[in-house]
Length: 163
Figure 1 (cartoon, one colour):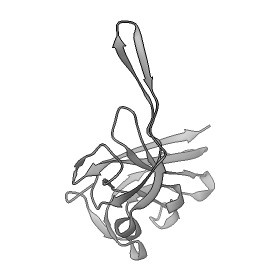
Figure 2 (figure 1 turned 135 degrees about the vertical axis):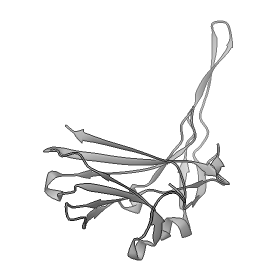
Figure 3 (figure 1 turned 90 degrees about the vertical axis):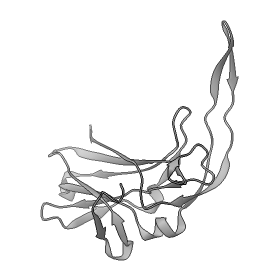
C-alpha cells in the first residue's frame, strides 16, 4: 500500500491509499482479516516501541458499491511473533444477510494522527545450547507501547468461510 496504489477520500475517515477485492459468493459467514507488517522509519522493524503500522480498516460494500459495514478501532490489535516482525491486525465477520460483495482496505485519519496504544507480551523462545540441551527463555512483558500510524505499508489479507 503506497504511492503506486490508488487513493480515495473516505469522508470523515480521511484520504488513504486503498486496495479493493471482490468477496467470494458464500451462503456461510465469511471472515475477513487484514494484517500490516511493522515498520520502523519505513523499514521492517523489530521492537514494537518506536515503530509504525499501516493500520488497516475494512470497509465492506454491497453489489452497488455502497458501504454496508466497517471494522472498528476496538478490533485492532498488535500481534508479536517469535520469528517474524510484529503485525497490526483487524478482522470482521460478514453474514450473508449483510450483502457484502467487496472489501476495501484502507486506513483512517484517526490512526494516522493518533496511532495505537496498548501492551504486548513477547513470546518465549527455545534455543539449543549444546547437543541435546535446550534452554527455554520466557517472553518479556507485558510492555506498554505507542505505535504510530503510517500512510503506507505491506498488507496481507485472508478471506475464509466460517463453518
